[in-house]
Length: 375
Image (tube, rainbow, N blue to C red; front, side, top):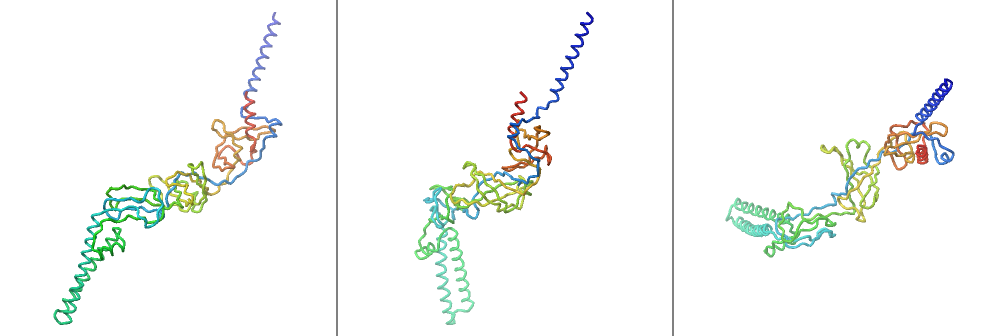
């Protein structure tokens, strides 16, 4: 009986040791390690990690703007009431085209003042001519003649000032000559286009009273436009005038337009801590509209750092990983911190050293093998 108990005790001890060894083997196995078979090795490629130069690319939100030298805000030259509108939104106009007609009591008053000034010049001219004749006949003194001359000069100055005011109010030379010859007042004047272009804003209707401080029409030439963006000051060091950029236009299914930085602002906005950058864009087809949203993809200076091809990255739960060769046919999946990237490669900020053998193609197959081994 004692012999039987002794044998049972020995079997229990041996069984316990066997289970402990199995548990230890399981504990030692790393779920991120993969042993690749011949079929997997045929589908992967690995090489030593190396320094890769990548241009730092900034994605900067911006918008399309009208070039300021191709933009005209048109107001009324005089206060008055709109009696006719000829310029409509979206219409293409030429410089000098009539956009609207306005009736103005101020204009009528100024025309009347000009007519009176013309008549005064005529009167003072006759008075001076008479004074010259009388002076030649020793009837009046030279001082009296000079007084009439001074009065004539003052009248002419008043007339010219009145004429200049009519020009300011939108009248042309022909309009003023007509008033002067016919001595008839016309209280209407035209609001005309100052440049060639398209009417992109219209803020007036018939019957509306307007004054010179209001913008009634906005005209722009849109064959060339600006792309404008605000760059955080901490990123300005990566940029310079002349840098090539790609302009992403989401409105046209990510249409890309090539350009260059033509302006890099000289001041930092104290509120937003940004600097303005600008590029000029050809818009001959008229696809780009003012205030349309864009993204400027700006390529700055090259940065050299350890990196891998984009295909080497395997994302697990949004965490980037790579596979590093650790031995004969053995690979370890390792989380890494990514740096800047382009369409081909990405820098590894943390998790990979230069010279370590890393899988650059076929990492997807290794990850599938790893997941299969866990099941």
